[in-house]
Length: 248
Image 1 (cartoon, rainbow, N blue to C red):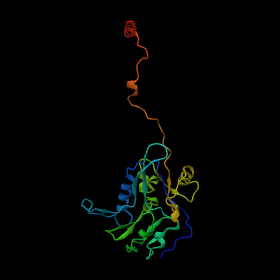
Image 2 (cartoon, one colour; image 1 turned 30 degrees about the vertical axis):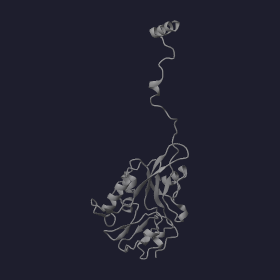
Image 3 (cartoon, rainbow, N blue to C red; image 1 turned 135 degrees about the vertical axis):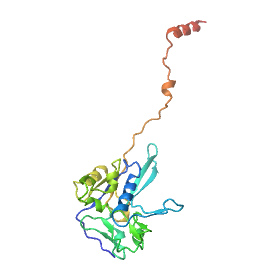
Image 4 (cartoon, rainbow, N blue to C red; image 1 turned 90 degrees about the horizontal axis):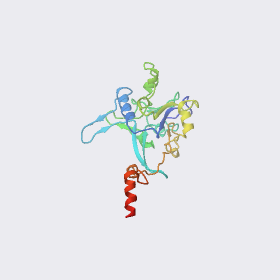
């Protein structure tokens, strides 16, 4: 079994704004592309265009319809990947030590050379954040693009996870939660960032910003401007005719 560090120097993670996410899946595509081309073995797509396709995705977007107490129903897009928990059960349950949490930045990773694909980590993770790559025979998970964020060959603006870099709505933010002055710490404090399923006791690092209350508007009849009388009292020839007819 793998031991967790008592503390980490940094707590790198994501803040995801549920008010801004539009469910476009750009983050899913960017994650799939980057992790297929770089870190570890490529993410498998087996029989991708057949009757029973199987693929590995480290980031997925779920969509839910939510009915607020006031106002119309809303569609909430909910991206989900590894939360890089402080008390990560996927690490402590690993029989080979393949799963581990880094002391220097808190990122949870898998040593694919030591992984035997037993699936215990996926069983232990309450968030469903791990997948068995059936082609490679090892467990895969979000790495926070560890091969991007420290890559000095990339321009500084690209040294962030692929999902964050590609999000067209600016719904994803990356930073150090151990630094109270970081962008993710400030966003969490200002917007009431929430942990996912804190009752599990895993102490997830990632945070979600709740949707803001939506504007409520009274129902408007789109035909009302066309049905409204032009004048309350007839004028001109019609006014004279109306008065003449009243005398008959």
